[in-house]
Image (cartoon, rainbow, N blue to C red; front, side, top):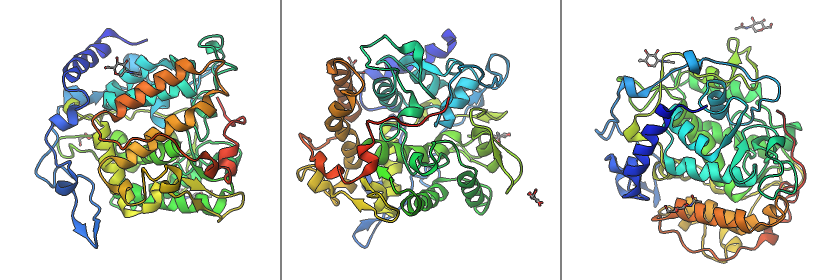
Length: 435
Ligand SMILES: *[C@@H]1O[C@H](CO)[C@@H](O)[C@H](O)[C@H]1NC(C)=O
Ligand SMILES: *[C@@H]1O[C@H](CO)[C@@H](O)[C@H](O)[C@H]1NC(C)=O
Ligand SMILES: *[C@@H]1O[C@H](CO)[C@@H](O)[C@H](O)[C@H]1NC(C)=O
């Protein structure tokens, strides 16, 4: 499915990165990324701002030829049919519909890494940890489905049952409080919700038809409060909550925005947002056709020297967290609506992390990522006959993703603190999914 022309730039990139690992491209590309440069201090707390490179006088370059993403010819839109899988990630669905991932919606780790670079400009570091994570928790260690179960993968990798795919990974990967997809236990499915899309679209319209990180921060707060008020089983796990939920919001702007000479950082208008979320109709009468996500025509991705990497993502996520500390919460409702209890990070981690130090350095990312390893054995033992290989790969992937981030060393956590949350105790039971 992948042409060699799509792999070559990736190999070149990988080679150039190898010597600098883990200092990825966006650090090579100068921009204010240290806490002191990018943020202002008020009331003892760093103030918000997202890194606005243009404001700082540093503009990402724009090169139409390198950044154009075709949606024609071999990349023409072909909707899923038959057993093709589409799921809770609009970007991956659009990629499969346009031949940037295998059309059946089952991709290898390599497909995911090269495809997300080619179609969106995702950094190799983020793509690698996300793809390996998916292959371990939702697939057969090598591949996974971006939607429902992939029976074709059964029999490989010593699995106990059919790999459930991204759609069946509730609170392992796909989680509550996401932007457009509804909370599983609130709706009985994790399908996109028109009401949620309409709310985000409206916020963009009120911001001069621009969905930017400020709009997404506002929207994330709305969704957080909505989940507390409406989903008795709302649960934010360390990885699916702190990391994946942040990514679900920042990715919308950083990846879906159309880059141009006028707006090299990107501008995401309502029409482009509709295209990536398979939305038709006019405000406020929208219809969503899940699985029909599309790349708009004449759309441009990130510049190759400005790929979205882990350090860049950490900055964006932290800028959101600083404005609304609840985004760093691990915890949930305890079986009724409006019963949210947050787990004290210090209690959970034996004092290694606490509310204050989560805002320092890369700690929030370290916290979400390192906790994976602590929680993995329980979850993996429900998936594999022998978890040794899966756990080894995961440990290596987490080590690579956190290399050079000066993460505090986490050795154990108190998992009993999670037992009060039905969203956690249901983790090993069957999630709902659709194809
Ligand atoms: C939305 O649909 C309603 C009911 O069909 C209709 O009355 C209204 O005019 C529509 N609004 C727009 C903006 O199309
Ligand atoms: C992207 O920006 C360019 C330059 O402004 C514009 O010509 C093009 O139509 C935009 N694409 C989309 C999908 O909005
Ligand atoms: C982690 O990085 C090392 C060194 O580059 C590499 O050999 C290993 O395969 C990586 N681990 C994973 C799981 O990708």
